[in-house]
Amino acid sequence: MDVILTNAKVRTLDPSAPLAEAIAVRDGRILSVGGKEAVEPLATSQTRVIDLQGRTVVPGFIDTHNHFCLYALMIDQADCRPAAGCSRGEDVIQALRAQAERTPPGQWVMGWGYASYLLDDGKELTRHDLDRASEAHPICLVHVSFHGAVVNTRALEVLEITRETPDPPGGVIHRDPQGEPNGVLSEAAFMGPLFFRTPSIYSSMMSAYSPEARLQVLQRCAERYLSLGIVGAHDPFVDSVTLRAYCDAAESGRFPFRLQAYILNQWADSLLALGVRQGFGSEWIRIGAVKVFLDGGMSSRTAAVFEPYETGGGTGILNYDQETLNHEIERFHKAGLQISVHAQGDRALEMLLVSFERVLSHGNPLRHHIVHAGNLTPSQLERVGALGLYITSQANFFSLLGDGFLEAFGPVRSQGLYPFRSILDRGVRLALSSDCPVAEPDPLIGVRDAVLRKTASGREIAPSEAITVEEALALYTREAAYFSFDEARWGTITEGKWADLVVLERDPLEVPPEEIPQCRVHMTLVGGKVVYGR
Image 1 (cartoon, rainbow, N blue to C red):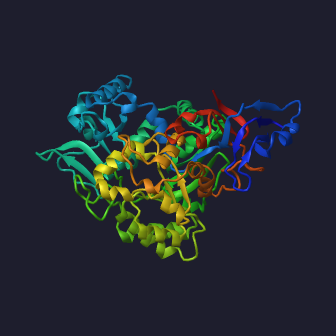
Image 2: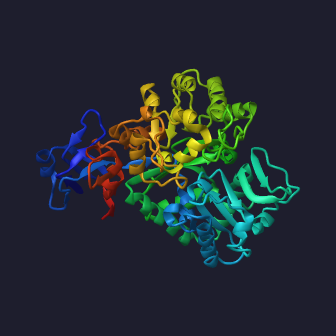
Image 3: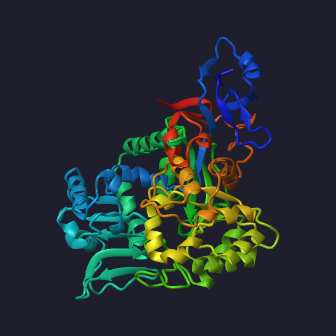
């Protein structure tokens, strides 16, 4: 026996045996779960016995939509969130200036977590503001939704964006009254330079790291996640450089974290040519779904909706027309590849359901899923259920972006957003995730927000769609495991499964919902090894 955890409240999330007092682990897997009297006698002289003194144990958290590598890079850049002290526009400029002073001239400077509605002064920044941070560096200040950015004049020059540059399909280059680009880029106008140019901003930043430095960046990010009880994540935006970095990290033996690598559809032809399927790889790094990016974000008012937004107008942005989307869904489905589609607005969701209805006639054996589905209508939910589609969504958006949702959709329409209670009652398989770095990755924040559904200002969004604490925990664990076909490996504390476990200081089911984030992680185990401890 390697480890025994005892004197605990074990919430297994296994409906057949929901509570226990002790867990025995051998060779990285759970050998026994039950009462102290049954488990403790399994100890040998070599067993590490850990007395948890009444603390609560739950399965390791799984984040089914998390831009892990992008967040790892952002940690090294300028944190421009109010939580980091950027409460005014000038604070953001100062944070970017400080980052520029640490960065060799000519290299990209990134800021993240910015949105004018999060700032006390509501400042809408433009390239002229960012020029005050640095004119020697191209600067990209990413909107908190990651559906747009502000860049400085030097960045516009590097990206070759001028007065004559047309808006790309699915994107907008915003301009001042004289017709000059003002530095604000939305959707494809931002995503193209960030990921798809050769070289892209992202690849340029990755290439600036040595292999060892890249590994250290990933390690620091993993340590942060493990301190939050997250033992695995699905990264939905993995290119060849990122996949190589993940593989190097896994091979180093210094990266005790489980990752599903989702390949964007524009990069997936190599998977088709090689016949690679979901699940290819090791227990640490595996190929996941093919990701399709259909529309934008709701707080940025770029999600594709039928009815114009209450403030700012417009009906959002689509990256595909119906015919092209049908083709993408059909070719990956026929190839036997799992498909994960970003769709937020009801107009985008309608298109997506039309595409899936063309290919799904006998259930959903490949476990295709929708990401976000924030503006899902009741009639669309019925069709999702009939098709057997899965949904991975983000409760933690309520406390971060919720006030932006209310502003964009108004007090009436916003009450139909993120209908978690209805999704579960319809029998649709649902998982919760963070979409980090859009939001904090902390699952306990997500659990709280799924129960309370309150914005940062304290306003409620559809309280009738709240779910229970136990249901929310299951959506980060047991239910999340289904998205990677791993329900037999993890997600519950059950004999034979991986010993990926989280020890909490307090029981989330026994504290007021507002205090759930204060339950705090005391210890995290992956494969039976303690990888984080206070």
